[in-house]
Image (cartoon, rainbow, N blue to C red; front, side, top):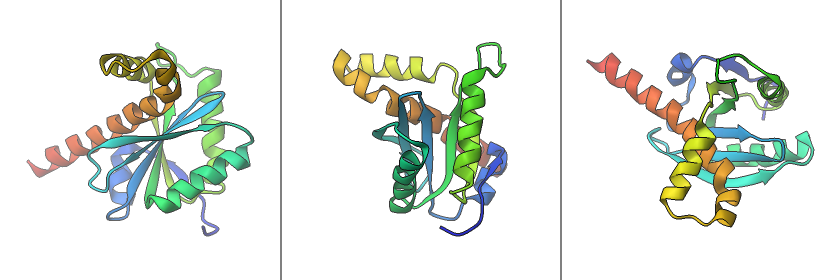
Length: 165
């Protein structure tokens, strides 16, 4: 990676800043784990990846950077845990701090995406798939990251189809 720094951008400018063929990485930050999801190269489908068990920031970042390089990632979507009234509490502030720290080491654009109810939707989806309670606990964070990333992908698709008409 070079000495460039990442920046927080609006989802509306993501397509313009994303290199052709690059994928998007979705992150769902928890206090103990980080859920991961990666888009396909066509930016239509989010797929969950293994969960990172959080340790120290630089160790967690090393795993994320390895995934960025292996999966040709061109941007990162980070779930922003807003309160139900839209205000930001301590978890949202911690997510913004994580983003600022990550951008010092990862020269990619970062989109902060409202993640309200993503864990609820992920849990519902896993229940519908009849995933056992133990397996749901293992998969919930990456499933939530997939829901967060899929929301961005759906927005990008919607904007592209609106622009084409």
